[in-house]
Length: 324
Image (tube, rainbow, N blue to C red):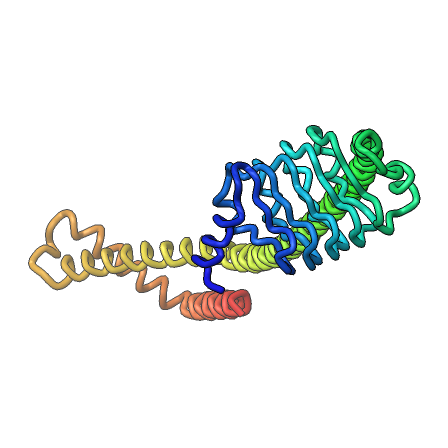
């Protein structure tokens, strides 16, 4: 059967504000089609083979009276409480054992029939016999009260679960924070230990460098001291003969110059025309006397020359020994 034929058939089933779908051999509720008839506030689905009601049925909030008697219902949708305008509900002769917790939200409900359902004991006690109009009204009132108690219990249980979940989450977060704090402290400690290790290594390196530098300075000082001592010894050894060498050399130079000068003067006076001059007469006489004295003192001069040569040789050997 097509969608259009269903719509036409539903139009044939409507009379004013009443939609009569009873004895239609239905196995499910045509929710989509019913949603188009918002003026149909009374819905009769009795005497069918409906096993369950879809969740979308709870969106038909315009319904005020619903007859679902003599079907095969085993449960009602959880959001049945959304039918806030529902005043009359007939669930006679089904297979219901419990009602959804949201049933307590049907605050407009004035009439309810739950006869011939295998209800749980507490719910059956609240529903009563429903043998007449008065009992059905009482059934609506007492069942709503009973369902409110159940709803409160459900809410408390849900709150308890939520509280438990939140508590578990708080504990989990606390453990997470504690773990993160430990890890942070561990990282901080490891960082400090690493820094301390690097500092010790650095201090050890600096100490080693300082020791090397100090040893180097000591070696340099020893070397300088040794070189200084050697230089001092050398200086002591060299400083003594140098003045002697210098004085003796100067003495011999002066003596040589004097002799050369005297020889020159004597030669000039004896060999030139100046020999008869008054200046050269005493010089010639002195030369003659010196020659005469030299002949007589030849042995003494020779011995003096030998002594001078020995003294010069000894001085030369002393100087060479100091240098070595």
